[in-house]
Amino acid sequence: MVGYPSLFELSFFVHHPFSIAMLYRSFVILHILSVGVLIGLFTVSVIGTSMRRKVAGTAAELASIRSGATMAPIMANIGSIGLLISGIIMTLMHYSFFPFATVPWLAVMQTDFLVIMAISGAILAPNGKKILALSTTELGSPLATNGASPELQALLRKQMMVQVLVAVLVLVAITMGESKSMTWGSL
Image (tube, rainbow, N blue to C red; front, side, top):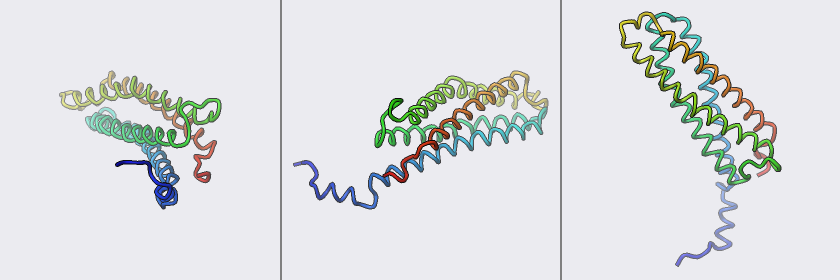
């Protein structure tokens, strides 16, 4: 027969070394690591753009574009999914969703994340797929030695502008998160 846990069992869980506070801190660490992956993605994108400009007009430019377009969705998914899962769990453990009246910094962060996800899903992901397909096609064509076509270059410029916007929104979220304690000391 399954019953409610005894007071001793509840007491053991609260005083056990792996308590709710430790679990919460683990999700804070996952959250910070996920942000790090997204910041790393932007950094790699900027470095890749710089390197690509050095080989502009060659097949190496197309190979560089294809490599970046292959890696970006992987890093974006890892970072976004980590943020989403850890953010939801931390919110369920200590806060509420969109608490503009009580915890405005968190509400701004949550809204900011929704905007980032909308931009990523509506613009970055579809453009990334187009960039990958077009760079792969161009790399296999006889004109590969000429580098990226004007169409591909236009897609890349658009993608970089949107990435800068997302990076600014990530910095807003980081600022909001650091403006108030993530409850490291209050648990």
